[in-house]
Image (cartoon, rainbow, N blue to C red):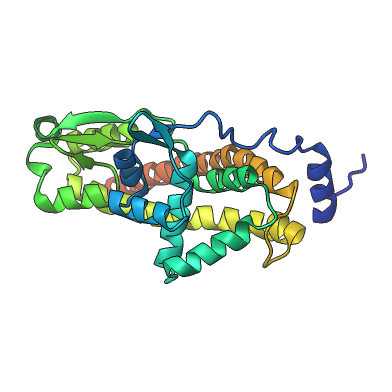
Length: 280
């Protein structure tokens, strides 16, 4: 049986031929999650004042007006995240306006916004839960200290909202609760979660670097952005690559966990055997 390996260029041609028509697979900008200005600022890690300032400077599209309330969507959230990332790199708002104008020039605005949403959004499959501070104390008791709370908030696992707490990832919260009940201090759990996150960051960077090198750079050029129909096609591709990347990471993590747990058991059995032989 013979097999042929497609070159990256051939794969790209196939992707282009089989990709849906522009906009077909890209994020639907007509059916977006909606936010008030306060909710938008919180989701983006920004402030209401900043949101209004970016609007005044033309960096953010205007919200939809419903009565006296401005309604924002994932489009605004995506743009806010991009502005925040550029500010962290040292760009001024004037620089950012020039960059965004260059990015939009000659491109369909809906396609541009759709790509921004695809690049910056990640849908947490879990529905956030809410607690009050008494619930937290009941779940973790003396493990709750100011230092531990600061660490949990910095990791984004607990988000104070007035007199209640939002828990964006209930499964992680419940896993932490079970570990504490089993005898692992909450501070130790959070310390190791931070270390795990650093390793996961490296895994994600490796995977995305592969995509960038073999798909994006080769197709559009290392220092270029897509044009015309390629804008929604890239948005659609990025939307499809997310579950693929998650599947790879989840399966590999499961494989490594199985190997690691088995090694711990075998190590313990060897220690027991060595102890028995020493006393015979």
